[in-house]
Image: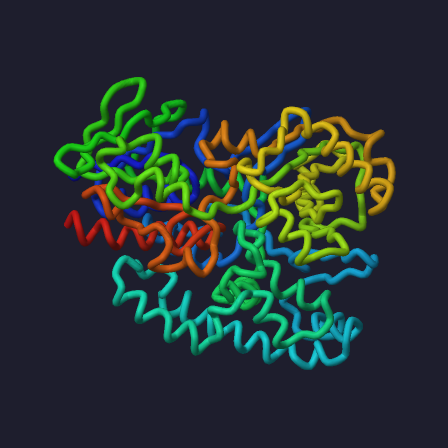
Length: 492
C-alpha cells in the first residue's frame, strides 16, 4: 500500500483522503487545529452553535458521489433539510427578493422590479444550464488543466458560452433592473470572487442551485464534516490533529514526506490542502522551487477576507431567513473598495446566517444563533484590526439594529465573538488573511490557476480552494476528484 500524507483536513483534504483510502492507498491526514474541518470549524458557546466557515450545501449529487466511494448514502449519514426559499436578498431601498427554485415565484418578484426582467428569466436559466452542462455534467470542472492543449480545448467552449465575460456582464445581458442584476451575478462573492471580473463560467451556479437545491445539514455544517471524518476513519484512514506540518521534505526533486514537531512521516506522495502560498513559501525550501519562487508567489492575486460576528441573541427576528443578504446602496463601487482600492469603506453589505431559523437546537429556546459576515479587504491593505475590530463591530451592530431594523439586538446579546482577517491568518495559515485563497479571475482560471500537481516537485499535489476548479463546497469536492485522477495515474 502506497503511503499518502495530506496536510490539512478542510473539505477538499477530507474528500481526497476518502477517495484515495477507498482506492487502497494508506492515507494519513495531518491537521494543525484540535479538530478537523479547516475553515469549516464549529464554535459553541453558552448553548449557541455556529458554523465558522461554509454554511450552505449545494450540488448534493457531487457530495453523494463521495459517500458512494464507501457504499454509503449521504441522506442516511447526514440529516439534510432543503431550504425554501434559498435565501432572502434585502436591497437598500427596503425591497427584497426571496430567491428560490420556483420559476413562477421568481418571475413574479422580478416582474415587480421591472416587467421585462421576468420575461428574460427563462432565457437566462437556459444559458446558465449550458454552462452547467459543460462544467458539471460533462466533467470539465474535474478535468485537470495542466497543459496548454487542455487550455486550448477549454477556451473555445467558454467563448461559445459567453463564459469569459464577467458574471455581472453576463447578467446585464438579460436583466435591466439593478436588483435583478445583483441577484444573478453575486454568486462569485460566495467563493471570494469579484463579480465584475470573475469569469461568467460561475454563472452555472444559478442553474446548479435550481437543479440540486440549497440544503442545510441538521446540527450545522460541522455535522457534515463529522460524517466525512467517520467515513475516512471507517475506511482505515488515520488523522493526527494538533500536529501542523513544519516542512515538506524533498530529495532529488521528489516529495518524500512531511516533518512535524512529532517526527518525520515518510510517504510516497504528499498533498497540501493548506493555503497555496503557505504551502510553497513556508513548507518547501526556496531552492526546490523554480516556477513558484517567492517573487512569483507574491504576484498572485489573492481574494478578499471577511470580518465575522458570531452573535447569540435572546430573541428571534422573523424578517431574517436561514440565509439573508443585506445590501448597501453601492454595488460595484463597494466591490472596488474591497478588491482594488483596499480600503475599509464607511458602508457595507453583509451575509447573515441564522441556522436556528431551521434548526432550533442551534440556540437556546426562544433565542437566535446569528453569524454576520462582512466582506473586507485582505491584510495587504494594512488595516490594523487590533485597533479596528471593536469599533467596526459596533458600527455593524448599530446598523443592523437602527438602520436595518433588528430591534433590541444589542440589549439581548448573550454571545459576541469577533473573527477578523488576523484570525484567518493565525488559525488557518491563510496568506493575507484571505478566506478563499487565490482569487477566481480569468487570469487565474483553469490552466492559469495553480495546478493540482506541482510543476516543481514530483509526487507533490494540491487540493482545495486555490487549485482547479476553485473554492466553495462543490468546488473543493471537485478539486478532490481532479487531484485524485492525477495521482492515480501517477502512482498506479
